[in-house]
Amino acid sequence: MGKITTKFVCNKCAYEVPKWMGKCPGCNSWNTMVEETVAPRVKGGGKSKSKAVPLSAIADTDIYRFSSGNSELDRVLGGGIVPGSLILLGGDPGIGKSTLLLQVAQSIAQTGKKVIYLSGEESLKQIRLRSLRMGIDSGNILLVNEPDIDCLSEYVDELDPELIIIDSIQTVYTKEISSIPGSISQLRECTAHLMELAKKREKAVFLVGHVTKDGAIAGPKILEHIVDVVIYFEGEKNFAFRLLRGIKNRFGSTDEIGILEMSGHGLMEVIDPSYIFVGSAQNDACGTAITASFEGSRPLLIEIQALVSASGPGYPRRMASGIDQNRLALIIAVLEKRRSLNLSAYDVYIKVTGGMFLKDPSVDLSIAAAITSSLFNRPLPAATVFIGELSLSGQIRQVPFLEQRLKEIEKLGYSKAVIPSSAFKIADTRRELEIIEVNNLDDVIELIG
Ligand code: TYD
Ligand code: MG
Image (cartoon, rainbow, N blue to C red; front, side, top):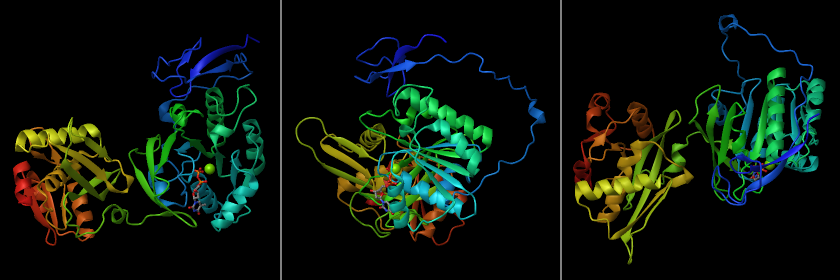
């Protein structure tokens, strides 16, 4: 056996140094270095090496997936759970991770298959109370209150489950490492063990990981590269809607989002998500614009609110919630330069409803329209949706998936859509929806009148 040594690991970015430092050289955060003991690996371990397999010899069958019972979660997973995959579900404490996974367990248990639910966080009684509240009661959900991950393979041999849930990775440990549960080396080692278990036994494993803001417990960020799928559960606690956001997926596309609603009986799928992000179809308040943003593989109608108000002395304020601050600065700069709107004497606030964060550049036009509307104190045309990317020259540029966006707009009962002008070929077959084509910002400002 080699010598047991220690090292210092940043609990934010996992940067390693041999000696303690106040500031992490990796991410420049202060006081994040924690001591970890490094036990040397046992040499050999009696394992024989696996054989190299020709690529062409591997059967080209489709990936088999089974449903989690929740269509929004299935969507983010790329169509369902793949056996043998390790899925990390991260999120703030209290957001609903345990609730969601208990519901998944129930739906799999109902098909007659077994689910192991290992909880290091709550007592069995607490889980029982939650399950009663949600109307979940099944003999196929097997609760394990054993934080030692080394015992898990015995449970798997004994029970042959379809799914294993670890709630949470921060509370389990392996005896191979002496550091406390939740430390970086425990997190990494336990995850590696679970990955091996998942792959060897072809079992799907869900890992719950808490994200903490103060870094007291190492965040699951460092586990992202080990696991197959990373999903973040987002939302504000005092807001019923929750977003499932795919960050990484070895079996499907990322950027997919799922929308759920927390109710008294657990999390419900939101059937028509566009309805929750727009106030009312006939909104005619100044500074409010509707846009159709493409999130994952579907368009969502979302309300953008702008408030332009005279600023006090000093620099004017630019505040963006739900879009990138730099994007707001860019749109304001284009409005000032190309349309000579004097926004330097005004504070500009932008808010996206429903706690969404929009990255789709095609919402630029709606932001510009909302700002102009608030500045002029004139409402935008009623029941109108704005789609288009703004170029630095003030031109409105084409956007992808226009047809799908227009369908969603029509479905929700809007009567007009303002779109980039070169898109006329797609749009001219439409009857119910009036299409207004715009070339540049002048056309848009003309609409506001
Ligand atoms: P939980 O799943 O325990 O969160 P996490 O595992 O992410 O820490 O969810 C906790 C919150 O959800 C708690 O504040 C209560 C709320 N909740 C409901 O509103 N309805 C329900 O049916 C359940 C089970 C929980
Ligand atoms: Mg929990």
